[in-house]
Image (tube, rainbow, N blue to C red; front, top):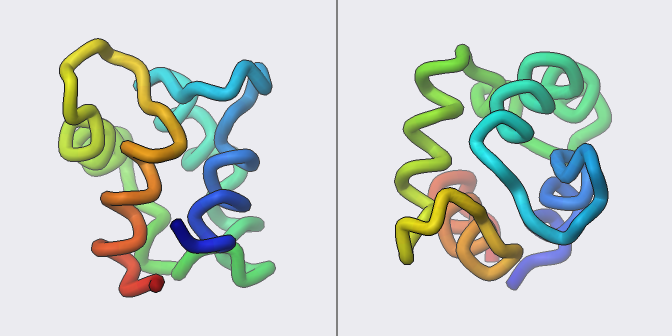
Length: 84
């Protein structure tokens, strides 16, 4: 798991409960995405609309429980953003 994935996960975890919901991902990317990209936490092209954010959530939710763990999230963003 990359440090970048962990940092992004923590930035998106709005209620800081250690998990991400679909709503958190959509809201956080919409409200924080541009500043996260500007600060280098994520690539600018990773800041997308609600549908793309929802699709990212679906790709990461490996067990279908509608909650993303750090491990699920990092597996997808590391691959999608080219992080090691």
